[in-house]
Image (cartoon, rainbow, N blue to C red; front, side):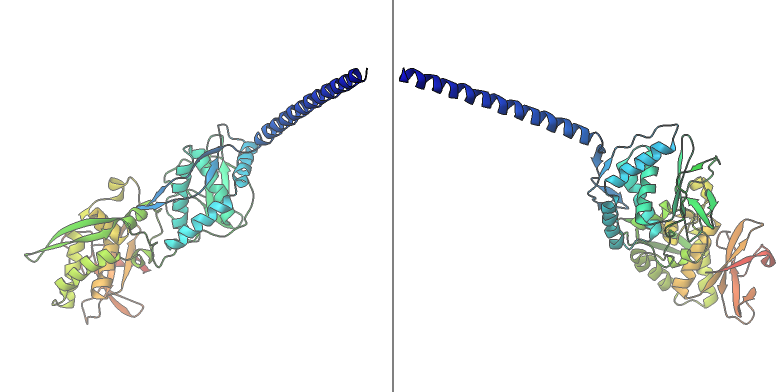
Length: 408
C-alpha cells in the first residue's frame, strides 16, 4: 500500500513535469511568433537599400564612399506626396554622414561649390539610374549641405534650381523671392514648361565659384604636339598637359566671360613646357615682334572651329582646353592669346566685345609713342585679332567705338 502511494505520487510528478514542459514550449512558440511579427512590422516601415557606392571616377581620381542609398520608385505622374515621402526616406538614411565624407574629399582636392556640385552629379548617377531619382537625391543632399535650392516638378520631370553667386549663360532660371535660381542641370535650349514648387524656402547659402584657381585634379595627363611657322622658321612645341583639369573644364557650364578665364592658368605641366618654350623663342625679339609672334601662333597653330561645330552649344574654353583641343573659335583664341601675352611677355590686356557683330578680340597694353589704337584708363592699347588669319597687331576691321571693354 505504501509502495503504491509512492508510485502514484511519482506518476503525478512526472505528469506535472511534462505539462510544464509543454507550457514552456508553447510559451516559446508564442514569443517567437510575436518576435517575427514585430520584426516584420518594423522592417516594413524601414527603407529598402539599393547597392552601396563602390567607386567613383572623379576626373581620373578613384573615390570611395561608404553609403547605402534607399530605393526610390518615382513614377509619372509625379505627386507632391510621393516626392515628400521619398525625401523623408533619404533623410532617414543619415545623409549627413555622406556629406561629411564628400566634404573631406572636397577639401582634399581644393574644390569650390561648383566643383562640389559636379562631384555630386557623379555620385547621384552612381547611386540611381533613373533621372528623376537622381534629381531628388541631389536636391535632398544639397538641402542637407545647406545650399539655397528649390525643387520644381511637372507631371513627368524634376528640376533642381540653385542660387548661384556667379553668372551662367544659356541655361534656364527662375526668379523667386529676391533671388535668381538657375537650373543646376545646366542644359541649354530647354523648352519652358509649367512647374510646381515643392517646398517654398529661401533658407541656405549661395553656390559659389573660386575665380582665382581651379580645383586640384591632376592624375591624368595628355601629350600635345604643335607645329608652327613664323617668318619662314619652323617651330615645334611639345609637352604634356593636365587632362584631369581639361575634363573638369568640359563639365563646367558656360561661365560668364571674364577674368576667371585668365586666372585659371595653364597647369604646371603645360607651363613648364609651352610657356617656357615660347619665352625662349621670343626672348631676342623686339616687343612689337614678340606680340606679332604670339598673335600668329594663336591664329595659325589652332584650327578655327565654332562651339556649335565642336560641342553643339555655345561655351567659352579655358587656355588648357584650347591646348588639348587644338581648335578654337574667336573667344577661345582671344582668351589663349591674352593669357600668353600675360605669361610670356608680362603684358596685361582687355577684351573687346562687339555685341552687334557677335565677335571678340583683344587690346594689349603697349606703351609706344604712336603704335597704339586706343587709350583706356590712361593706358595705351594695341588691338590684336587672334581669330583672323594674317592680321598684324593694330589691324582691326571692327568699329572700336562699338566695342565693350572687359578688364580682365
